Length: 241
Image (cartoon, rainbow, N blue to C red):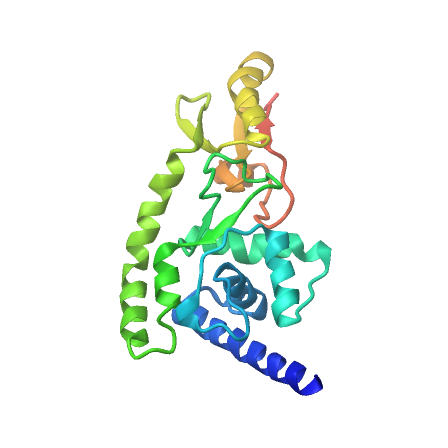
């Protein structure tokens, strides 16, 4: 029994190392080249210590389900309060890179919904299935070369689920669908013209893209600086008087 457990741990550690090498080959940012990101990739490929890469799958999982996979198959237990860390510092970045898909079953689902599901992109699934084979190097090179094209396509796909918001100066802003952004739209289009007609709209946040609208130069003149990683209000309006 103990021998089998040791063997499983050894296989699991090797698979985590292999997943990390895949991420390094994909040139993901160094902040995502870690065990947490490797485990996330393995979970979304349905990989277990004894599964061959050619048998990779594409399950649709939520963050908690991914973390359960870490523990069940690789013995890596993350505390429940690290759920947001997995989402913000691994899954979010990989969605932005086009490696993962967010809510392929319901693209209109709010970004902050507890029902969010993620799935590995088909192109990455096909690539992962070739890991360790003779065709791996060539396939990896082709994938990396096409990655920029994939990322250029992604924003157009996301445009389909954005909320248009008209700014006071006539420009149009688009916010991620759902969540508090429906209220943000009403604040900008209805509250501001009525109650702060002389105000300057200097910041609008977004559930999916924190700094959707920022008048950086104006904020600097007011002596304010922005911390993009800190907590921010949804809307900031300056009344000069």
